[in-house]
Image (tube, rainbow, N blue to C red; front, side, top):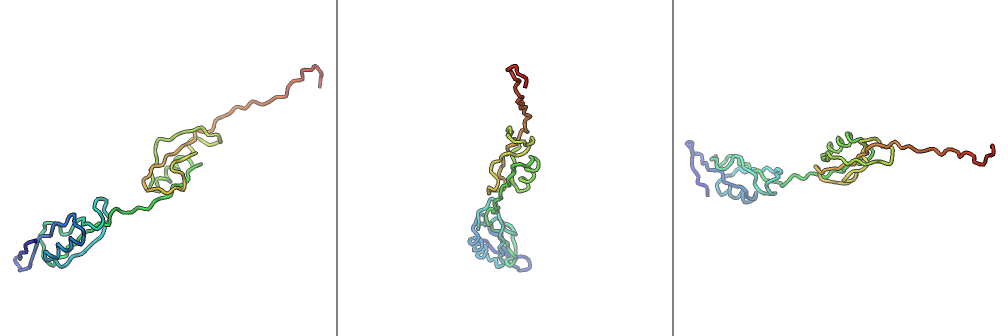
Length: 171
């Protein structure tokens, strides 16, 4: 029980209770038992405080305030739920465009690319594969690994020339 006092004007004052890490119902009961009558609840997400537990109060413990002053209890709704994102299919896109589009979605891109020889006429630095694959749902912040073309190779293909007649007969 929190001791009550009167200030110079005869107004009852008391110290705000220590409510951490109480659940919101227990916190409100403590404040009511201490004589506070004007209790307000504000809900907000918290990465560190479990849902329905007190994050903080305003005024804070152990401030001494009037019994009719508004005491605000900030209550956790838990971690903010961030929706998944769908990875874009980057095959055939140059690496700079792929990185920009993927990071704009909230994904990270591994800066160490794998280069492979492409059997197609694909320019160097064009995405030929990725992990996770395009159209996959992932959490924001997921890392995407890109495989890039090392560029098309110049191939020399020998031409087949007609064989010379070896029979000694003019054709």
